[in-house]
Image (cartoon, rainbow, N blue to C red):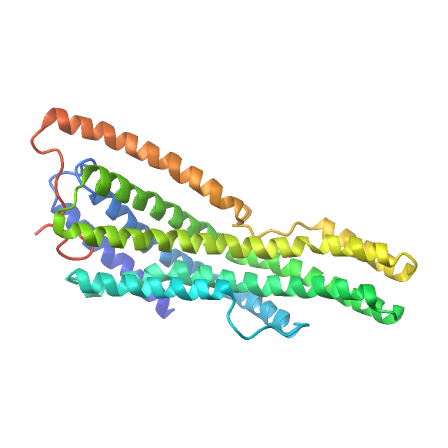
Length: 358
C-alpha cells in the first residue's frame, strides 16, 4: 500500500509539473524542440507504474498463490544446484549497477530543482524493472524444474526395478502437470501487468530512439553544454530499456524450450522400455498430457513472450519511428517556410527533467 501511495504521489506531482511547463509555452509545436518526446517519456512511466502496482495489489491472493506454487517447486528440487552465480545472474548484476550509475550520473550532472519529484519518479521508474526481475525469477525456477524432470527421465532408462521405475514415472507425470499449471497460472496472474510493462517499453524505446536520432544527431537541438550529458544518458537509457526487454524474452523463452524438450525424452524412454507394459501405459498417458497443453508465457493471451518477440518489436518500433519522423519532417518544412531564421530552438538542460523554461 505504501508503494501505491508513492506511485500515486508521483503521478499527481508529475501532472502538476507537466501542466506548469505547458503553461510556460506559447504553443505546443513538436517540430520545434524535444518537448513532446520528453513529455511522453515522463508521463508514460508516471501512469504505467501505478497501474502495475495497483493490479498486483488487487490480485494479491492470486499473486500469493503463484509464490506458494513456486515454494512447492523449490521443495521438489531433485538435484543440487551450484552455489556460484550463472552468467545470466552476472548480467542482471551488471544491469542493476548500470541503473544505479544512471541515478548517480543524473544527480551529479544535472541540478535537482525538484528532488520531491525526481526520487519518487525514479522509484516509479524501477517498478517495471523489479516486475521483470520477478517474472524472470519465476521462469528460472520453472526452467530448473523442467531440467530436473528431463534429467530424471534420462536416468529411468537405466533403472532395473520396474516397480521403482513406475513409481518415479508417475511422480514425474504429476510434477509435469503441476509445472504446466504453474505456467498457466503465472501467465493469467501477471499477464495484464506484462501487457502494460511491454507497452511502456515500446513507448520508451520509440521516443528514446526518436530523441537520440532525430533531435540529437539530425537537428542538434541541444546546446553544446548539454550535449555530452544527453549522449551518455541516452546511451545508458537505451541499454537499460533494451536490456530489460531482452532479459524478459530470454527468460520466458528458456523455460518454454526446456519444457518442450520433455516430449523428446518421453519418446526416447518409450523406445527403451518396449518390454515394460505398465511403464508403456504411463508413458502414453504422460505423452498425451504433454501434447494436450501448450507451454507458453503469454501476456493475457494477446501475444507470447519469447525471443521471436524481439524481432517483432524491432519491426514495430522501426515502423512507428518512421511514421513519427515523417510527421516531424512535414512540421519542419512548415517552419522553414514560415520562419527560416528560427528553425530550431536550442534546449539548455538547466535542471532535471530539462523541460522547464527560466
